[in-house]
Image (cartoon, rainbow, N blue to C red):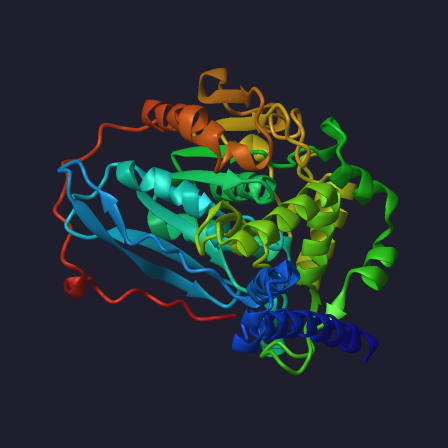
Length: 433
């Protein structure tokens, strides 16, 4: 019960801070206090507004908020988020653009399962929508999944990816961002051996820990010095009675968020202090730069305990991908079996999460792939976030990735006019289990 008590205690602390913020905001806005010219009253209300917003966002799943995209005809086309495949631990989503011809490029974005929702890649999706049919993996919050559904570890994750790629079709271009890069590589190798016709056309790996030992970071140092027993004792908790996943062992999103923020504590502290001052002066907005970033950054989700532990033990400690010894469903996944899928790696020179060298190691593992189908890109001055969502992505990396996709694509078939939304065939839902 101690694991459940700890989980509920963290939730109680979050709710208390949210309540304190809302109380301070309401108290500072009381008409009676308007008689006093004391600036501290405005500061109290501003502190309350920022605090309430901060702690309430920690348990809210953000919306995609991509209403339209501009087409080649210069018109705004409505974007609808459709579920192509539904599974217990994650869905395959398609951003369907109404009244636009089908785009020849089909891109599957593999979102990380590392504490944040797939909406962390919203700007990445936005940047690709004008030029491609975009799909994405939408992982579910473990706290909302009943224990009766079963486990979910990195082998299950790999099989999910293989099934998603099969569903979209063999002309898929996969882009894996950060944490799922090694598992996307494994899923591609798995298809190469088990279902060659379902392999994707290209695989782009962005800032992922293919070989964590290739370049040391705080993340890899943590993985080496902490034992699996210590992780089980310190990091895992059992979901409380408030959620559908009551009793499930998880690595809580709130704990992951605390870890993220501690890495740049001074920067985050300054950002919130400045936001309180802007709010007190009336200069802050609901969608200003601070709120736009932190509404997404603070929205965290729980991971299943088995997924978290198997990631640390098999990817970071055991280096099973780096040593080509990864096993899925009792079968050794030989990365050397990849012989036709073009593979590209993207790294940021200033990435402090997956340092340069960790991701490009994938190319050496692809022993069955000719050099003409291998490519790499190192972006100068780019950090971890910038290589998939920042200025570096928009101005430099995105064009390079699209050129790589086009260079390894067949001549596209003639475009077909998309049917209206009301005529779209009901999407298939796969059975669980």
